[in-house]
Image 1 (tube, each protein chain N blue to C red):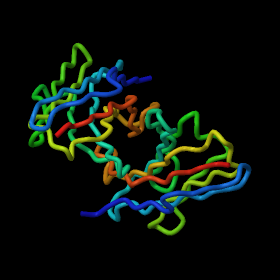
Image 2 (cartoon, rainbow over the protein chains, first blue to last red; image 1 turned 120 degrees about the vertical axis):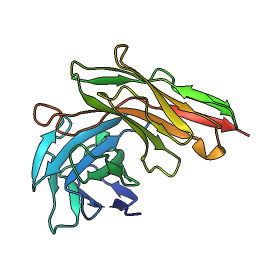
Image 3 (spheres, helix red, strand yellow; image 1 turned 45 degrees about the horizontal axis):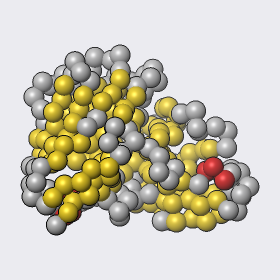
Image 4 (cartoon, rainbow over the protein chains, first blue to last red; image 1 turned 180 degrees about the vertical axis):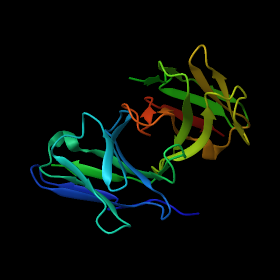
Length: 113
Length: 119
């Protein structure tokens, strides 16, 4: 069964550094999402992406964050200058239609030192 | 804005027994989707079951079923014949049906319930 894949599984970065989290959505899916889960807290929506543009973003998704689909297969989340509070599990999800179920990747655990 | 509440941080069940996980939500919308996702220690979020609000019939998927009470804004998950592999964090989630506004397909999650299955 096709899967959403995320790399790396764990990223350790110094505060203030830029980090790029990578996702390969399921190939025929058109809608892409990033969520994050701070340890012990609920999963929170960050951003949705469709037709090569952001369709919705949350208050968390400020100017430090950006998303890109650079080559038609990858979907990336960039954090420009990381803060300690960015430490979390980041999940990528995709769906073939806006109302279709979202399929999640295994997540990337981001640790900011 | 929609909110989802799971009031049980932890639940436990004996293998082969039945357990019910609770979820309530708040919305002013009349049509929407509700989901239960499972997150085992392997971390991947796995869709367990989906309910469309305009359907009165409760969704079922093998040993998993829901009790959807639209007026009460309640959406509980029943797991029958619990197995060791059911041990996981379970998240209830809400999604709007309509595009535009502030809910273009995003999922709003509850806090999660950790389910332990005892042999």
